[in-house]
Length: 341
Image (cartoon, rainbow, N blue to C red; front, side, top):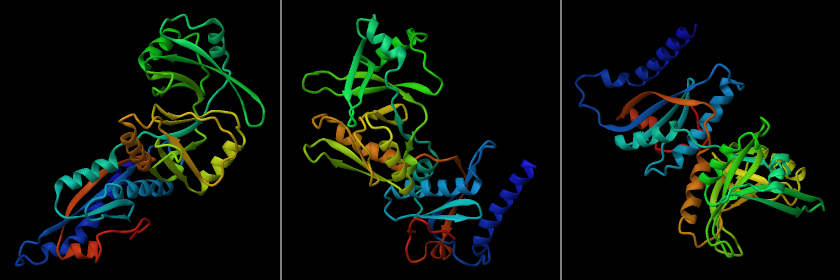
């Protein structure tokens, strides 16, 4: 049954492009048409255990493809279209390198942006603070702070001069530091600053389940802290993300919110109160670090790329030739988000 479905899709795709290219072979006496563009067709690879419908996954993937393609800032803006269950990208020009760049941007996987809550006063970590780490390069550091609603908060984390030292220590004490199945240990780098001449690494125990993800980020851009020149990344959430943000911050005052991209901790602020308005800022630390501004732009690119809900596979590539390309591109080579045929 799966084989027949695959064959039917292949035939449909072949007919789609055969019909659109019939005029090329209709008159053999014409001069060879000039290639003025390239069309790429992508199909979704939906796993059998997917919880969302194919239509939902298709719409999510289409939105991600639009963002990734338009963020490439090509000289002429491509058209991104929906047609017969495929995502089409039409590029102006015959540049093979440009087509390869677009294909790579669409099909590559991206690390997910996730907002997760810290697990404070974990009994195994608190026991380490009482007994000490027992390792010369690793310190068990207690923390205490008062929340905005006057609750006394406590926690304990491990510190070391490098992530490798921390990971080696955690690996050697796997039983003592065993966490529940829905928890994990993540590592954050703290840059050098006044009173701390060298960067250090620290741990956080967090819940695996994200309370908010990058799928709800409508836009991201680089800005700077108004009171300093520290580079920051400003996030704007969509309507659903804004509701989740307000609900999550309002019910977790005093808790640390751990923001991660893949396995990298970007920020770990304490939630001071309910946040409404659908915006957030990720601070990247000291401004005199030469890589911070570059990292800010890299982070924005990674966030804007978002994660595909399923894998996409290139199933067809063809040249667009005149005059057929004029119909493909029309007067303008670009299509605004949401355009479909």
